[in-house]
Image (cartoon, rainbow, N blue to C red; front, side):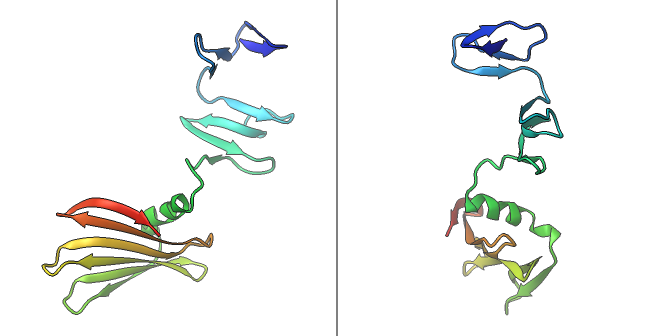
Length: 155
């Protein structure tokens, strides 16, 4: 079905339809595009379904996934989840336990993962802090209680 002049009409082979008893619109099928301008599909710009991942593309840009939010925490989270790809330095304390790991993420930026322990040597928190190439300065603290992750905070 397609909307023309305030009315829905059925079109043979149409991919857009209203959903009965709702105010929604269904774009039927996978791998579909909502294009703007005069070019349709992957070379145009707009919104697309790429294997179940919604992506967008600005005019002259490239396809990229919607981030699910644009908060600083989300951007920092993306870098912190991928720290293993960066060169790092391990730093040990006087008692032989790992105190921190410093990841060199390029551009003069680094993220430090500090491990905190209680008197018996049990991990109590992991603190990620530093700057990303995008200029994000943030601290993420993961707190553990009885060996289980109990809280995550950003500051």
